[in-house]
Image (cartoon, rainbow, N blue to C red):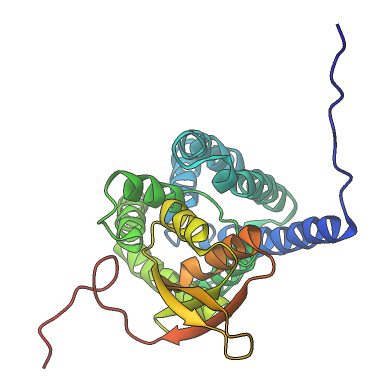
Length: 301
């Protein structure tokens, strides 16, 4: 019996270059976020959101290493995401989570946190929010996340699609912050955490997507129906197929119109590129988005 040969495609230089660029971004982002936690949040008892916040609580109560605790807490979430959302969603997130966990513990070992303890907790909070936001933005720019409440949000939204992703993450983060403040027995800790969350989220938005409320995509591609199906299933966003006609060729075509939140713009752009690298995209700012899946439609003034 002949054993069939397995065809292994030789990676192109473009693929290798993309992987190296991804890794550089991940390294910079993880170092920045780890610095926010180890150098400013932990020594100044500033509550953190997400799984890293739970890891800080465990460190405070049980003296467990923050990085390894962060990894242990993320593994069940990543396994669930793998099962329900697919391996493409979690492959980069798994790598970033492992890398961030290792850097968190290495930084805690080589850089004594006591050096960065300051009486001015507001100053420490500002630096914590800036470093955390910059680190997360750099990681997100390459289509990954640090895991934690992001995965929780996507899992909840898969079961209940009408629930806002941002709302789920906000509630999960708020629960962790309140828990941290209770453990530290310091209400100010939760207040400083709110400042960190505000600064980091605004910085992420400013770095990645500017200051608009959303992005509007006009997409011209060879197989619009297949791409529309991919956007609906993988992003959970609606798509409108509009008739179009090329003025130069006179050829009738179809155009996709899709509106997404700022945090979803990078994923949509990568999805379009993976589906059809020759697609033509026009991306504009959507200053206000009202309706299902976004802000509720109010009564007006």
